[in-house]
Length: 341
Image (cartoon, rainbow, N blue to C red; front, side, top):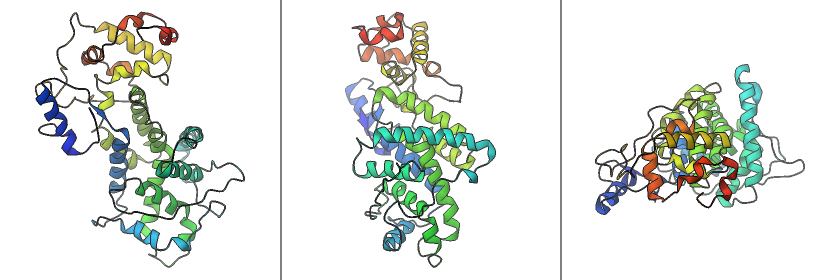
């Protein structure tokens, strides 16, 4: 099943995913939309920072931004308030540099394949992280829909507001931002551009998802050195949606060329140690009678590997997908040429 992450789909009692399985009398694989998982993470951080107190359908901060957009720069060749590494503690500066380098490298490969809001997000991240090629000018699009249901809006508009911080400060107080919002918006944008964006731009393939999700948790744990409250907020949200780090979905990483060979070798070896004599009839780590929601790993740390997340339920997935594990005994580099693989 492929689905977004609304409660009507993913609830553990009577929601659509559970009901479909009960009607069919069999357990299905849960393949959640990665970008909808990302929406939950960014929204959770935005709300925990208390940037916006309004309960209206539209974010009033963004309404003021749209109303006064003509007072602000429309191109990136004007003075911009970009990422400032001097604002971070010494212990975090090297980490920020690592995050920044990774995002800019990823962004270069994404600019040619993204479009609309997704392209604009990549461009804005590149501008904020000071990665725009010399001589190139990025044009800032006029703010459009502000409804909270347009979940890309908070990312796009927050980065622009942060970039225009100098110009906004020269306007009468409260024209766009209030005094308490400035630092909070910057905290949000630092997180979005340094950590969230690299993961978000990688949401292309289910086989890559376990590796990217594990890396995101590692990055969030590291981001605690940059901004502990933001990192904890993102982790709380993400740990409710670790569908690709369950024992059932981890075997997909065997087919990801992004996973280092040593990690795939270790995962295959771990799976072989728990191979059952007969195919499992249904997953064991599920809520309810085996047709419920998959149980998430209880703890994931910076030292957790994909092999650590394998479980007997991994073999249920191998059986469902009719994967012949004969290639497990071969060198990882030779897997792509093996017919079983």
